[in-house]
Image 1 (cartoon, rainbow, N blue to C red):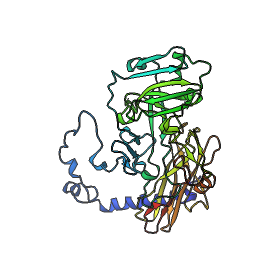
Image 2: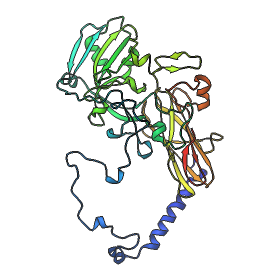
Image 3: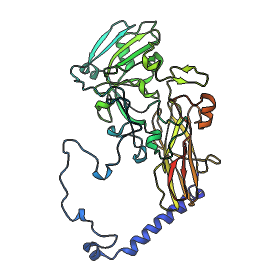
Image 4: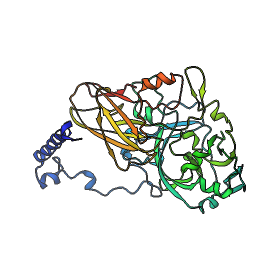
Length: 417
C-alpha cells in the first residue's frame, strides 16, 4: 500500500515541516540557548549533576512513567485473589516487561523456597520421578517468544463501559520470552505408557490450581519454565516453576507447578467443570475449549486517548492467534464499511504478539476504528454479532470479536464495543 495514496506521506511531511519551521523560527543562537530561552535552550538537567540511582540493586522505571502500571479490572472477590491487566496502550514492541505482565491468581502468591520445591511426575509412566530445581536446570533449555491470554480477556459479550481503555478491554494478555525445559523432554525421561492420553497439572498455591491437558497439547511445545525475559520468574508469574502452553487459554499454564500426573482421560477438576467452560444458548456448557482464537486490537488511538488536532496519525495495534502466525490485518476507520491492509511489523512469529500499523489522516469528524486479523490457517477474526449469533451472551470466556473505538469530533476516543 502506498503511504502517499492514503494521505499519510503528505500529512507526515506537513506535520514534520511545521515542527521544523517552529524550531528554526524560535532559535536565537548559542547565546539565547545559554540564557535558557527559545526552543534550543539548554535544559536545567543538562546544567547540573544528576542524582544517584534510586535503586542501584535493581533498575526501576522513570518517575515520569509512574502511571504505566497494572490495574485491576474489578475488585477481587477474595482479599488474596487478583486479576490485573497490562497497560497495552502505553507499551511498545511485542515484549511485555515482566513487572507489567497481566496477573491472575485465586488464592494469593505463595512464597516458595526453590531449594525445597519439587516437581513430581507420576501416573501412567514407566519411571516416576521427583525432580528438584537443580535437576530441572540440568536438562537442555529452550527459549520461546509466546503470548499468554486469560480466557476471560475482553468481557464484551454484552458490551462494556464507554470509559474502558484497552487495558480494561484487552489487558489480560501479555507476551514474554519464556525459558525452560520442554515438557516432552521430561516425559521422555519418565517414559509414557501406551494408554497415556491426558496430563493433570497442579500448582502449589493455596487454591491448588489444577487442569487436565490433552497429551497432544503437552507434546506440542509445552515448556516447564523457570525464567521469563532473561530472569527467573517473578513470584506472581509462578516462581520457581510454571507450565507454559503456547496459544492455549492462560489458566492452563499452571503456575507454581508441583505435580504432573499422566492418565488415560481428563481428570474433571473444579477448574474445568464449574469454571472455564463456555455456556451456550441452549444451556449446555462446552468443555475443553483450549485454543485462544485469532484476535486483534488497536492500541493507539484507543479508549481514553485524546486527539489534540486534525491531521496525520499512525494507527497502531496488536494481533495474535493461538493457531499460529498472523497472516494479515485490515483496519477500518468507518466502522467496517471499508477496510485497508495494515503493515505487519517484523518479527511475525507463531503464537506471539504481532505489531501492525497503518497511516491515517483524521479530518476532525467522527470515526469508528476497527481492526480485523487473519491467521495462517485462514481463520478470520469475527465481529461481535457473529459470535453472539452462535454462542449467545451467557458466556464469560473466549471472546475474540472485532473491537471498535469511537472518535468524537472533539478528539475524545471511547470504547464502542
